[in-house]
Length: 333
Image 1 (cartoon, one colour):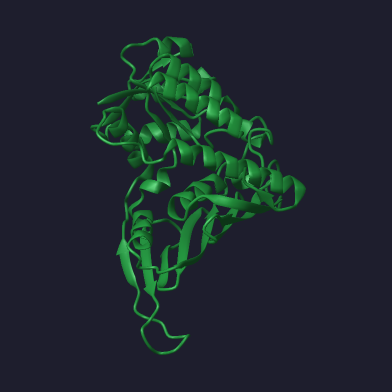
Image 2 (cartoon, helix red, strand yellow; image 1 turned 60 degrees about the vertical axis):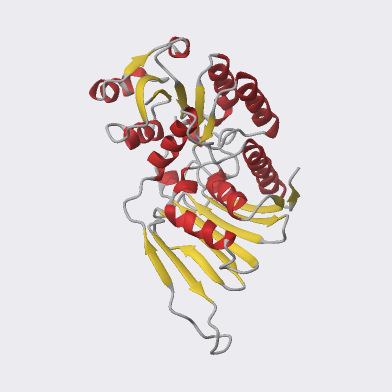
């Protein structure tokens, strides 16, 4: 059992804790540190989590194996370095970093310390996404042509003015940092590295943040992925990958349903075939991500998001932010 400390107990930090509290035999939260103690005292007391005022006290605690960070994005490099220096494994909320230089510095610290690093790209672990990955790898889709990602949330409509999430320095390019980075990582995983991006970012309804972000990624293998994100609509998540032999997709509003629609053998260009459907209801990808991290900490498996993918994902993110500012396509460096 990996004994973890949660750092940052806003709504997502609490979500991470709740995903495994009393539900996992691989990881448990035993300590916590947060900027606003009063907002977390009751939560920690009810779950018998030792709430500390000082992060250093957590880092020095021999009973803590790993740090899980749900903190502002600009703090990730510093926090990862401190955990690594203390010999603690580290799991960090996305985006991993806002700049490539910061990502590289954090990963260098992890490599030097020899600790495990995990990133909260929990949708990689969903079995519906796994089915898409399987159909790509086994050739069921044929030659890939393009992909579509759509993710939405009403979160931008209710953000408080004192929230760090309304700071454009922490959340550049609108819906990218909260939502779009999942699509970036997802398509790096499914399709491969990205050569060029183009982004359009706007504010339609949210009072304090740019809420609607659309970006296109041209992957190095020639596949184009089109991605649509908004912080001003009902919660939904779906992705689809198109190929010469069919379409593999998840269906709205969640990832619960996987569907494969093959190209029929006969009937002309407009003919359709009976789709294959697989239901994966009730799966908790947040728990799965934390348990995959715990497995890596225990030496049972490698965490599936590689250092190279983490750095490339940040490079893509940085290029999308630049494109949103300039209104022009940007090559990924």
